[in-house]
Length: 239
View: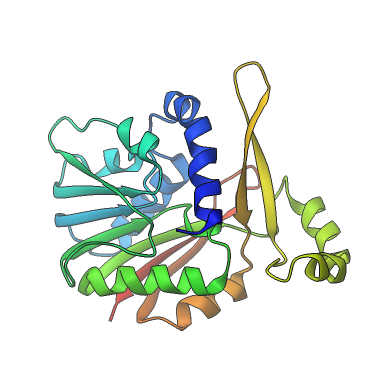
């Protein structure tokens, strides 16, 4: 793993106790999108369900009533260790980097990658992860993908400032991309305990990356957040 991976691991090690105490229920924006696509598309309801970047696996609660073998994959051991309990199913933890997914090819029926790819440092890494998921997904299996949108309420000023300073930022750090930010995480006493890296995506940027994979875009939506359209959600079919 790279130094940047260890940076993320250390950040989540610091925030995991508070994260797991605050985030026990599924993410509402994802729940809303899932309900929307379930009404319009025929999604699998059994088999192997893999959640990439699962955190404490809270989103798997939305699939608890179905006949799944749940696998929660995350780089943070601490978050996996505090994973949610499903009454009717077992959640199998997989502590790994998404760049390498140790599962059999064509074994997964449905995969989630929710609010995860915006933590990856470059397009090559995003592509690698999407292609790795494609390898383990069954043919015509589905991937539900989400990430934060670049022009969203709360970060718009930062994005405009970075655009104006693009030349200087790129000169200082050749790996820097427009949309790269760090966001703080505070404890109960409002003390800064960690900062997490994010890359906020533009629509064309995201679709260009997806177009370089084996997926077909079945659905694309902008929803959630304070602005009402702060996240990108995609339903992808594996070809």
